[in-house]
Length: 297
Image (tube, rainbow, N blue to C red):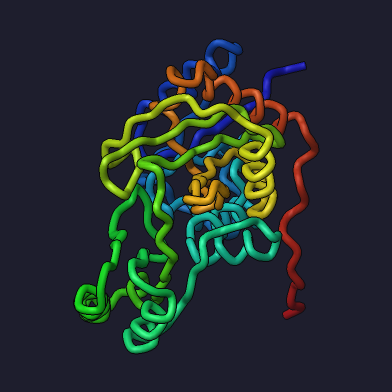
């Protein structure tokens, strides 16, 4: 049986993409890479570069989301799926999906005007975390400690005026023990997890957090897989928060995960595990195109 044809859709070749390409080469598989900056989609034609499976590794969420949607319309097998990117790329969509599946999350309130947002913040109680619904790497997060800070931040968002600043996503502040947990779910398995330590309240490695191996306890495993299932599964990174009373809450779910800083500390070759999953999906029967009623014109 011939090897599956794998395509990687990317924005640039970062450390993660180099590790993935190396892992594919070890299996004797040459991966076609497609730069999303050079793409032109014809909505009437299936792209000829898709192969058996497309592994999405775009940096830009909008490009990833729309590319996956177009590919899905043509019945192309993608990892992750368009529906997963749509949910995980929007924090409000993610929180709603987790709540629907009864996965524990911090309390969050949503408002659509600065006035209602201020009322929501005061109802929740200071401090709160104000987040853009769409964003990554810990950017534009704000810990709001008092009313004066809230009024200033809400005014700034209103004046900025973009769509992303018109939805006010307000989250309960969790007093973490100087760290959070990121777990990696591939398919139906939590393959490893790390603690992310930082002196700052934001614990993203993109902001300088240090990683340390976190044992995949039954609770970490159960909660991570439940979160992955809630958003549609695939290759995902789950951010967990530890509360002062010892509970675990799911904070976010990431669909184009970075993993370079988690391989050495966990001893798990995450790139190899991703390749295992991609090849398993490539061997499965492709799904039918997304349902839709055609118009007879």
